[in-house]
Amino acid sequence: MSAPAGVLVVGASAAGLSTVEALRRKGYDGRLTVLDAAAGAPYDRPPLSKQILSGTWDPERAHLRTQEQLDALGAEFLLGDAAVALDVPGRTVHTAHGRALSAEAVVLSTGLRPRRLPGAEDLTGLHVLRTLDEAVALRGALRNSRRVVVVGNGVLGSEIAATAAGLGLTTTLAGLQPAPMQDQFGPRVAGALADLHTRNGVRLVSGVGVGELTRDQGRATGVRLTSGEVLSADVVVAAIGCTPATDWLAGSGLDLTDGVTCDAYCRAAPGVYAAGDVARWYHQGLGTHLRLENRTNATAQAGVVAANILGQDLVYAPVPYFWTDQFDVKIQVYGAPAPDADVTIVEGEDGDRFVARYDRAGRTGAVLGWNMPKQARIHSRLLTGTPGGGRDCAAAATAAAPSA
Image (cartoon, rainbow, N blue to C red; front, top):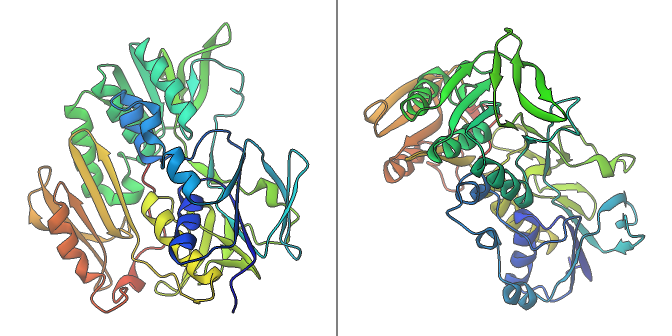
């Protein structure tokens, strides 16, 4: 298979930029075009809920590459112009500015859009956090506030609450899960995470939903829970998950079930690939389709997509991995921890520094490290005991939590 005459990447995300860089590293010297609705330079997302939100980094530090490095790629960046439709047979993307961009290979890396609380689109004092601009806006709001309520106790909500509490704000974390990230970690590790937040001043309101936002003169003043309790706030943050950014692909003929559905080679259709948060691909090791929302996956998957564009036919079957930083704790997860798995502390002690192993039906599905990165990596060999990995991975749960 000869290299395509041109490659079009839709989405200047970490996955999109990594695809471009991988193509160049592999010697591709053809035409590269990157299209994105945002006008700014590509940036990294994990720092948004931590270093950018806390103010320890200037926004520019989150940029993935300098302008000089971007120029060296020899790619055309068409920023500030959204993709609105895809002609799959013709591999042509139509844009909001009236462009029709065609290429022999198209890579979809449009990422996610945050879910928003219904009926609150025009309220001030209500924030989401997905983009760099949203992180900067939320940081400014927190600087001028005393009380914040974070709605959603998954990974992003937990990270935002940790950052807000670290800034000295009176912080409440409310969510449907019985403890922060329990759907991802199970009750034992989620209990340790709950203790960590409580020790650092976060009030946890768990296992309860939001009935409505309270408001005054067009501004959110808090949330009324389904229990009837009102949580007052100067700032409300909705961290209730994201959905794949695939609206523009409606009518394309692609399978858009929970993202862009791909085969084991990350191919959605002949000449059309997907990478990063938006990609739902067939994981041969697990025997099911999988979509991962994290930075590590974005880079690794982009490398496989680039290789396959150039004709290498690589199967993408990684051991899932993600991490989250909250307060002074780094949690690293290899595999996919099933919430109902048997959890054994195999090194260290609960609540301090430990490695947990998740077993179900006699197989190890995941390994979690709590401030023990080296030891967690060693124990993760249970998941990667054969060349190419995945010996025990087939028993892992098929949903892995995102890192923010």
